Image (tube, rainbow, N blue to C red; front, side):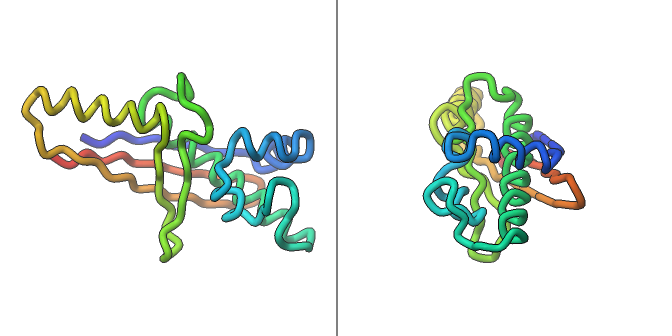
Length: 149
Protein backbone atom coordinates (compact mmCIF):
# COMPACT_ATOMS: atom_id res chain seq x y z
CA UNK A 1 0.00 0.00 0.00
CA UNK A 2 1.19 3.52 -0.78
CA UNK A 3 -0.15 6.77 0.69
CA UNK A 4 0.70 10.20 -0.68
CA UNK A 5 0.62 13.72 0.74
CA UNK A 6 1.77 17.02 -0.73
CA UNK A 7 1.71 20.62 0.41
CA UNK A 8 2.85 24.02 -0.80
CA UNK A 9 3.64 26.95 1.53
CA UNK A 10 3.91 30.66 0.83
CA UNK A 11 7.25 31.55 2.46
CA UNK A 12 6.27 35.15 3.39
CA UNK A 13 3.44 33.68 5.49
CA UNK A 14 5.97 31.71 7.58
CA UNK A 15 8.20 34.77 7.89
CA UNK A 16 5.23 36.85 9.09
CA UNK A 17 4.31 34.20 11.70
CA UNK A 18 7.90 34.15 12.91
CA UNK A 19 8.12 37.93 13.05
CA UNK A 20 4.83 38.17 14.94
CA UNK A 21 5.24 35.31 17.42
CA UNK A 22 8.99 34.61 17.44
CA UNK A 23 10.07 31.97 19.92
CA UNK A 24 6.46 30.92 20.68
CA UNK A 25 5.93 30.09 16.99
CA UNK A 26 9.17 28.12 16.78
CA UNK A 27 8.48 26.10 19.93
CA UNK A 28 4.88 25.37 18.99
CA UNK A 29 5.62 24.13 15.47
CA UNK A 30 9.23 22.89 15.36
CA UNK A 31 11.29 20.55 17.51
CA UNK A 32 14.61 21.80 18.92
CA UNK A 33 16.42 19.73 16.31
CA UNK A 34 14.39 21.26 13.48
CA UNK A 35 15.07 24.75 14.81
CA UNK A 36 18.80 24.06 14.98
CA UNK A 37 18.82 22.53 11.49
CA UNK A 38 17.16 25.69 10.17
CA UNK A 39 19.79 27.96 11.70
CA UNK A 40 18.07 28.96 14.94
CA UNK A 41 19.79 28.57 18.29
CA UNK A 42 17.59 28.60 21.41
CA UNK A 43 14.56 30.14 19.81
CA UNK A 44 14.72 33.52 18.13
CA UNK A 45 18.49 33.98 17.97
CA UNK A 46 19.88 33.22 14.54
CA UNK A 47 23.12 31.28 14.55
CA UNK A 48 24.23 33.32 11.51
CA UNK A 49 24.10 37.11 11.48
CA UNK A 50 23.40 38.16 7.89
CA UNK A 51 19.99 39.07 6.48
CA UNK A 52 20.52 36.45 3.73
CA UNK A 53 21.13 33.79 6.38
CA UNK A 54 17.96 34.85 8.19
CA UNK A 55 15.98 34.53 4.97
CA UNK A 56 17.54 31.10 4.31
CA UNK A 57 16.48 30.02 7.79
CA UNK A 58 12.89 31.11 7.13
CA UNK A 59 12.94 29.25 3.80
CA UNK A 60 14.06 26.08 5.61
CA UNK A 61 11.28 26.53 8.18
CA UNK A 62 8.74 26.85 5.35
CA UNK A 63 10.05 23.66 3.73
CA UNK A 64 9.65 21.77 6.97
CA UNK A 65 6.15 23.19 7.46
CA UNK A 66 5.20 21.91 3.99
CA UNK A 67 6.79 18.54 4.77
CA UNK A 68 4.88 18.20 8.06
CA UNK A 69 1.63 19.00 6.24
CA UNK A 70 2.46 16.45 3.53
CA UNK A 71 3.16 13.78 6.17
CA UNK A 72 -0.15 14.22 8.02
CA UNK A 73 -1.95 14.13 4.67
CA UNK A 74 -0.21 10.84 3.83
CA UNK A 75 -1.22 9.47 7.23
CA UNK A 76 -4.77 10.51 6.39
CA UNK A 77 -5.66 12.37 9.58
CA UNK A 78 -4.58 15.91 8.88
CA UNK A 79 -3.73 17.63 12.15
CA UNK A 80 -6.72 16.01 13.90
CA UNK A 81 -5.26 14.98 17.26
CA UNK A 82 -1.66 15.36 16.12
CA UNK A 83 0.59 18.11 17.46
CA UNK A 84 2.96 19.99 15.17
CA UNK A 85 6.01 18.61 16.96
CA UNK A 86 4.64 15.05 16.71
CA UNK A 87 5.92 15.13 13.12
CA UNK A 88 9.63 15.88 12.92
CA UNK A 89 11.52 16.48 9.70
CA UNK A 90 15.08 15.25 10.10
CA UNK A 91 18.06 14.84 7.80
CA UNK A 92 20.32 11.87 7.27
CA UNK A 93 24.07 12.57 7.20
CA UNK A 94 23.78 12.60 3.39
CA UNK A 95 21.34 15.54 3.62
CA UNK A 96 18.35 13.45 2.52
CA UNK A 97 15.22 14.44 4.46
CA UNK A 98 13.51 11.89 6.68
CA UNK A 99 10.50 11.67 8.98
CA UNK A 100 10.39 10.88 12.69
CA UNK A 101 6.96 10.46 14.28
CA UNK A 102 6.30 11.03 17.97
CA UNK A 103 3.34 10.73 20.36
CA UNK A 104 -0.07 10.53 18.62
CA UNK A 105 1.38 10.38 15.08
CA UNK A 106 3.54 7.37 16.00
CA UNK A 107 0.61 5.69 17.78
CA UNK A 108 -1.59 5.98 14.69
CA UNK A 109 0.85 3.97 12.59
CA UNK A 110 1.37 1.49 15.44
CA UNK A 111 -2.41 0.98 15.59
CA UNK A 112 -2.48 0.34 11.83
CA UNK A 113 0.23 -2.28 12.26
CA UNK A 114 -1.70 -4.00 15.05
CA UNK A 115 -4.86 -4.12 12.92
CA UNK A 116 -2.97 -5.58 9.97
CA UNK A 117 -1.25 -8.17 12.15
CA UNK A 118 -4.69 -9.38 13.16
CA UNK A 119 -5.31 -9.91 9.44
CA UNK A 120 -2.14 -12.06 9.30
CA UNK A 121 0.11 -9.49 7.64
CA UNK A 122 2.78 -10.18 10.24
CA UNK A 123 5.81 -8.79 8.38
CA UNK A 124 4.48 -5.33 7.69
CA UNK A 125 6.75 -2.35 8.03
CA UNK A 126 6.74 1.09 6.48
CA UNK A 127 9.13 3.61 4.97
CA UNK A 128 8.86 7.29 4.23
CA UNK A 129 10.04 8.98 1.06
CA UNK A 130 10.18 12.75 1.37
CA UNK A 131 11.03 15.49 -1.12
CA UNK A 132 11.27 19.23 -0.38
CA UNK A 133 11.84 22.06 -2.82
CA UNK A 134 11.92 25.85 -2.73
CA UNK A 135 11.47 28.38 -5.52
CA UNK A 136 10.83 32.09 -5.22
CA UNK A 137 8.19 32.65 -2.55
CA UNK A 138 7.13 29.00 -2.29
CA UNK A 139 8.23 25.81 -0.60
CA UNK A 140 6.71 22.47 -1.56
CA UNK A 141 6.97 18.98 -0.13
CA UNK A 142 5.74 15.55 -1.07
CA UNK A 143 5.59 12.65 1.39
CA UNK A 144 5.07 9.06 0.34
CA UNK A 145 4.32 6.44 2.98
CA UNK A 146 5.13 2.98 1.63
CA UNK A 147 3.97 -0.11 3.48
CA UNK A 148 6.11 -3.16 2.84
CA UNK A 149 4.39 -6.53 3.31
